[in-house]
Amino acid sequence: MTQGHTSTRRLVIASMATAAAAALLPLGAAAQAYPNKPITMVVPFSAGGTTDILARIVGQALTAELGQSVVIDNRAGAGGNIGGQLAARAPADGYTLFMGTVGTHAINESLYKKMPFDPIKDFAPLSRVANVPNLLVAHPAQPFKTVPELIAYAKANPGKINFGSSGSGSSIHLSGELFKSMAKVDMVHIPYKGSAPAVNDLLGNQIAIMFDNMPSAIQHVRAGKLRAIAVTTAKRSPELPNVPTIAEAGVPGYEATSWFGLFAPAGTPAPIVAQLNKAIVKVLNTPDVKQKIAAQGGDVVAETPEQFAAFIKAETAKWGKVVQESGASVD
Image (cartoon, helix red, strand yellow):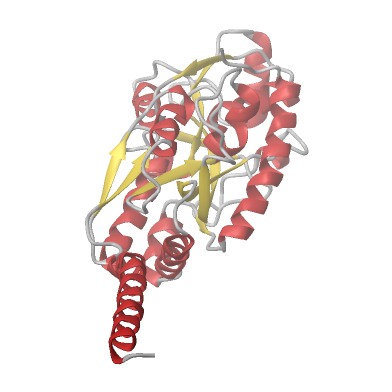
């Protein structure tokens, strides 16, 4: 081989190596650089509700952990489906997160005749954040203080008790539907665009009761503005140890728990999903975040994406049965 051919061959090989390195550089650089701009966390309910409260607790901690601002974007409506659709259609680049709920990812699929997104196919699970009891609360002016008194009043006044919720199909709504079915009472559901506006009307005695997520109701119970009648979980809450469960207070077998978790749009690169999961699990296990969520009545749950996905599958089957048996549906 001549010296000219040898030089040309070396030049070609060098060029190929440079091109290969250049092709790999953007992927490596992107992975190393993430995140290099603010992250948006879409919250599918209004400010002041439980989903928003938890999103802000975790978002603030992630801001410190990731070194970039996590901006909360409240997009309320349609039982969480408006925010869910927005997040599902966002670029799968790690810069849009979604604070999903038992409603958006386990209930709505059975409740709504037409869904604007697929809870399973359109999202990459990151980790559950917390399990939260629902709290049966009433305005203090209402003439019942216990579950048996509520049932007796409802049976004596069919259709006169109205209960608010954060939207049709939310866990707050279905907690009420489950109570109606198991206690065999007739109550009227009043849906709102989020828990906060429903609580405001409850505080004004414009609705009688709510099966609200504990974080958005507990402050008003502590202030004496709302009366806590019972919790919806199988066990009493450490934050309100004197408040009985609905099951022990007169409706045996009743249990309903809300949960909240973080997602990214489907197709988000695996290294970014892994990085986000690691950061979320780390902040959830810090004493500060644990204390803040516990003070709201919630129990922190940090898990792998695979564990979260399996949990969602089981919850979808469970709540699908509740929706079917309650007869609830939304057009």
